[in-house]
Length: 128
Image (cartoon, rainbow, N blue to C red; front, side):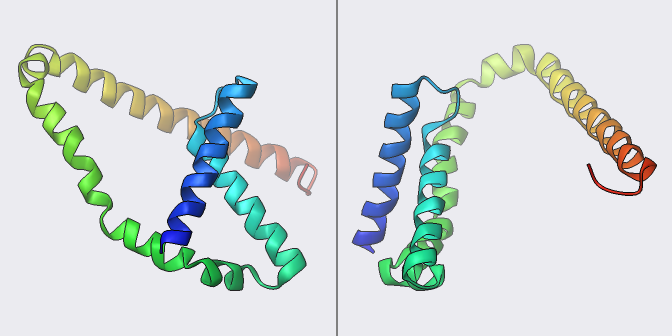
């Protein structure tokens, strides 16, 4: 488990370094996850199945254990919410309207894009 945690932390650190060094507007952990996936893919290509690489490092067990306690990570957000209760009381209605409006707008735009792409690919009978 220590080896797998070290691998995860190393990939996250490499992602953070890459993002800050290249000034890319992507979160470092996302780049780290891509690096981890690429490393597993390369390991699969040259050293056998990726599942063997995952099991060799204990990555599967470690990921399962981390997911089991993921809820604990939401405790600070809940505490922050309680701390800012007066702010939410004052601006809660505007926040709720913005949240609902942006969600509805996102759904409408997503449906519009899906319909447009479906019509575009159906026009000539093949995918672009």
